[in-house]
Image: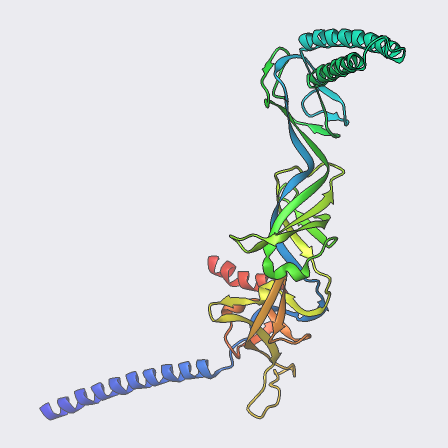
Length: 385
């Protein structure tokens, strides 16, 4: 009886072990089937590498300067009697701006003119007398010297009187005035700034290696933070004939028109010097490039090949696509596009988004960016529900 019970218990244990083993084997079989089943295609967006004319450009950062600019200052001391301009006013060349008190100078000039008139009369009388030999030649020379001295005094006082009036040295726009009527001005005191904004200079530096690519008259494009998305055209007007000792850079100056006076001196400008060469280059969207410490690479899309070298096709006969990671050499970047100088041919299709999901040889399906975004969001929405 005991033996029979032991046999029954042994049979039950054996059945339980066999059931567990069968369940485990079935799970392993399902996992093998899952991993051996073909993986679904990864949705990516793509673009073709294009060969297009690409004009080389030299980037730089510069500072805008007025074509003509000066801080107006008093040359002599005096009390401001009249201010003849307003802040921000446009003035013409020679227009009076400040009149200093000049009563003393006018009185001195009147005295000098009177002395000159007397010296002139005496000189004319002496010239008549010397011709008749009624006075000596030395006396006539003294009268001539007195007249010259009196004339010089008149010129001196006139010059001093002119310095009491400050005029615009050129046409331009006056800045905020720094003086008022009744102020005492010492020599060198600033009155206001005067800037000619009809044209502007932009000074910038380029490495000395770029010197052979530069010449006067070369076109330049620049932009400023105040007007995003807008560019302004200029041309190189001067190249410094020496290289800076400290930086080994070459100073360059470009000139541009500023008819609307949008641009102001002192603004920082991002600029590009347009090079004359316009060679075709292989260009791809900048998002296609994966930048790493080991080098820059792209994922190139091509038909997936089987072991026999033939294209692998889906059930509907469509050729499957796979990606190949390829390292490339890149060049200049501009407006969301980048030049590929080595490693890629024109016409090849490259992945532009979705690279983080890829590995070399991954099966992909090319979709639009919008469709890919919708496909990515659907699982998230389903999970949220």
